[in-house]
Amino acid sequence: MRVRILVAVCFAALAVSGCASLRTAEDAATAPIPTLRLPAPQPATRAVVILPGRGDDLKDLRRSGIADAVQGVWPDADVIFAELRLGDYRRGDAPQRLHTQVIAPARAHGYREVWLGGASMGGMGTLMHERLYPGAVDGLILLAPYLGGGSIPKEIRQAGGLAQWAPGPVRPVSASTWQRELWRHLQTWTADPMRTRQVWLAYGDRDRLRDAIGVLAPVLPADRVLVRPGGHAWTVWTPAAAELLRRTYAAARETNPATPQSSP
Image (cartoon, rainbow, N blue to C red; front, side):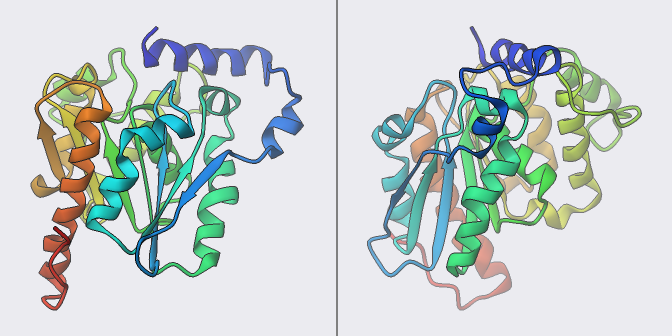
């Protein structure tokens, strides 16, 4: 099944049956998120937290090459994989657990910067965290993020774009509302363009999620969006992430000309 079907099923399960799981709700909510920290090859001054796509685990993230891509551009970055799975999103507390167990400890560690990113479902998780904790990280790396399906992207296009869209009254997040509430949050970016300056987006020109992603892309500065040949796969996302991080040096030099050039 596609990501949208599984996520919808999981939110529906949450709404109907609560935390249906082999573990109790309390145990699941307090269980440590599996993580893997890959130390920077140079003294670490920043951390990049990466969330997996559907079906990925820590080993898959390691095989994807994303850590090497990040550290090839930012050799001062510790890369931290955080294995949020579909069941975590189903339970509804994934952003809170991610913040408490991974993001806040990274902040407490004393890194100069903490970035958060993810692919597909992990991109969705990145945005869900940003929705609850705006400004808690220094940058977002969105690799073909899952933004939901259905009629909402069409609604937004027909309205003339995200800024003009009328999402309706705010509603509690549930199986039937989570997509609209996520898009409502993304709409707030249109009123404050400075919030998009550290949001970096990449996806393939044949990605199956490109229709919804294409609704978000115009909200970001043009140089923060990268479309590469290919579909919905790490073979697209890994090199794209490296290119996006190289672009951050040019963006930083806009405000600080003394910023050094990127690594080869």
